[in-house]
Image (cartoon, rainbow, N blue to C red; front, side, top):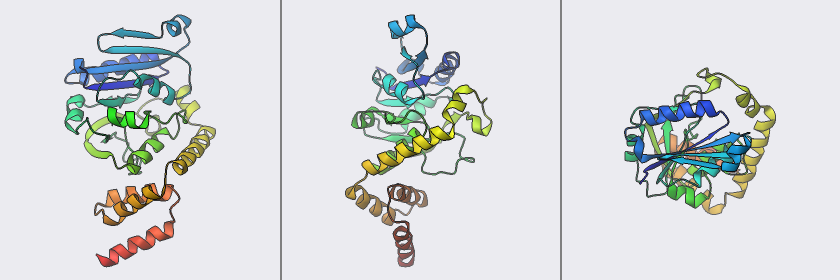
Length: 266
């Protein structure tokens, strides 16, 4: 029985296989990990075959699709583990990562795990959930890993937002999945990165994000978030509650006044 399902969307088959090898070598119990790779393929024979299975490895061949979202969601339909982790071409975990992740939470519950990825000095957005790690129960509740309206850009922003909206995030910054991001010089920029990083793609992603936020926020959500904002004494959690509220259109002045009132009362 697999404990963890890694799903790996990729348009770089050679690099993806090298990355898969590293993930499994760094695991304490690799045989307990189901590793599902979804490739963009331009080979007709592969696309016809669709799936290859060998032991704990599954390879899926799909016609080309821009970005990671479609491939992630396709791969997830094969996942059997209670914990699902999105592996990417430029993410490498620490040694014994599987054991640490499994011990970090009760994976029978609806949860999202927020780990450290090494970009924290460059990326100050405390609300961003680094490395997509969620329980099978959470996946089943949402019906997707990353919202299917996105292609690539901003899908992680929405994953972070809806995870915090539902208050299912467990903070485990002691667990490290290093993101070798090209923007901070940890890997080379290639054509796939450039295609996904245009202003057009960012504008498109932001518009989808704003539309989905409005669609997925109601008065009950607002009431719950306001209570969390007022009662939580942890500065980071208060900041995260403010992020969800403000992103959803809550009046910034009202929130600032509420913060001042709380400070006076304390």
